[in-house]
Length: 280
Image (cartoon, rainbow, N blue to C red):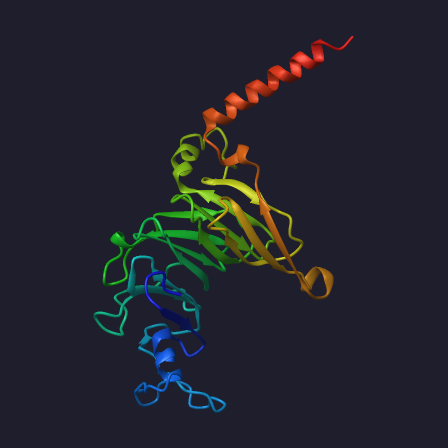
């Protein structure tokens, strides 16, 4: 869904990205008419009105796995697919790719999300177990442009990525390894500075939710309740069927400002020492 206009994006095995307007459906349902171009839309509707797309965008060479609108524009969007490509589109210009990154990952791309706080930052998740963050200002028309950073912390294919609605630098990623990782790219520099002391530290990673028993196929941040997340897992491999939905939130000691946390822990420490010393 587009955050600014009543538009919807879809992608599929036909290798195309399709732009739809909910207003077209409303017009058709109320007795108006929507003119479809030849070959567009589904002519096999069961007696219901058929609505044609606003545009069909071709540029992928394999199944389109995920799509996302630019948070500030109903005419700009991006997509990823099994061809390992990240494509940026601009419906104001044409139905061909505005920017096409041919090798965004080393494997199929499963998911994408556009930062609602910063229109330049885009996340992608892949079967190569990594999450990449791209800055569209670094991407050129010939598809050249490395990611700003590669986040490595999963041990299996990444299935979903999503920016936090409450903090511009925070995002989550879930994967087939059963983990839901929470990252903060503002912490990447701090981690890198201490890499020699702790080479195993995963830059930017500050929380892992390991409560699911199998691959975490989807999750979503609660925009009304900061730091609350709902996540779902496909437990077929471990239980023989079914799935699990969890609603959870990490301890606020993890994401609050460090000085506040240290001050609170210091008070707690004083209280514990006081209670211990008062015992006979």
